[in-house]
Length: 319
Ligand code: CP
Ligand code: NVA
View: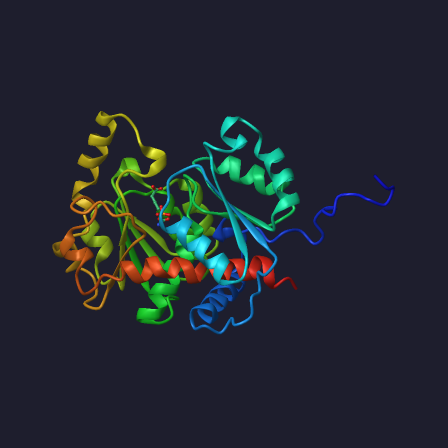
């Protein structure tokens, strides 16, 4: 090896643009990503800004939307993807996230990770010299929220100042809604059983940021007058437990079902959202999911566009 020959990847300068949590970015930066998403959706990104770039997509948990929308989105922007599952990579056999990050940073231009361990995501990001994107953890799902804000605004205009109601489990998506309330300046009302309320830390953070986030035990009270009503599965991937515990969650959450009777308490033009996959007949009824107020499939489509905004910001728009 000649003295001058050395690895191309000599360290990150400036630091990579990670997309780990909404709270990591200010409102204008998130708005910039959404603006890019809108431009991508309108077909205004005509060149191939990710040409010559490769994104690694790592799934330690199942996925339909995240996997397909990232893969298609990267390709449409001119880039390539490598898809890995936890089971068929060394990460799944105990290679550290730090070493995985150091290695993948030599091969690819960005890494998306879906995992049930936010600690793993953070370790990966701390050691990667390329952008790391959160594709869902047990405590957050920021890509979903970018799509959700885009969807609300397409249907009902600016989300700032609006009332959004969540009914059901105070899960990872709910926690990202709390972060979004702070960053996009909407009021968030969350109805959950006491045992399944979102953690105090994220609520405290949002309130310290000036957000209005209110907790309820009665879903009808939370939903009253809301312009958007949201729910999600009663058993998230990181909560899959033995049958008895699942039965207990179902019993606790049954009164929080998003059904026609509950939706009648919302504003007459409220939209209904769900990140999907839905468990029809559990957290949401067929009548609501397939009803005129439901925008769930627009929301699913917008994962593609919103993530293009994130990718363009992280990879193609370095200032
Ligand atoms: N909403 C969402 O993230 O769906 P997938 O689990 O199918 O990726
Ligand atoms: N809360 C759900 C979201 C799936 C996209 C889960 O974590 O399983």
